[in-house]
Length: 118
Image 1 (cartoon, rainbow, N blue to C red):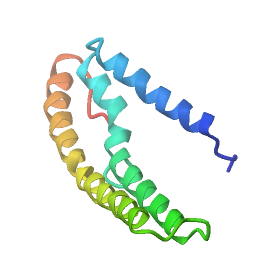
Image 2: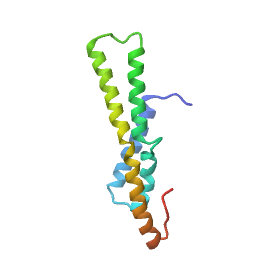
Image 3: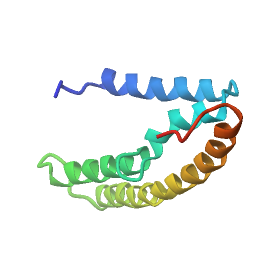
Image 4: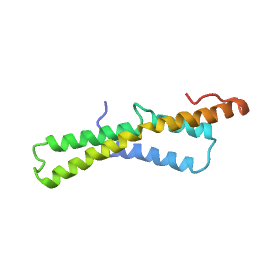
């Protein structure tokens, strides 16, 4: 795996920003759902990934020998873990995507010849 840098992470967030801009241009719903689908995957989507990232960051900070052992740091680490749980709860968004895919998949299939996004 290539080394991660702030620039590589910034490139990923730029891609997400590009997607947001694209969706604001009112694309075809079937195409929009296909683009968003990987982001909401129940196992590898953004909510799950962000939750894992936050937990890993909390663990890294807590276990690092140079991290100060103070109540303030403990509170910040707890807040990271709480945010991770909140993000993980969003994994259910894939159900919304499934329902939208069914709605637009059946409409698109009958009107435009498209099938499911997967």
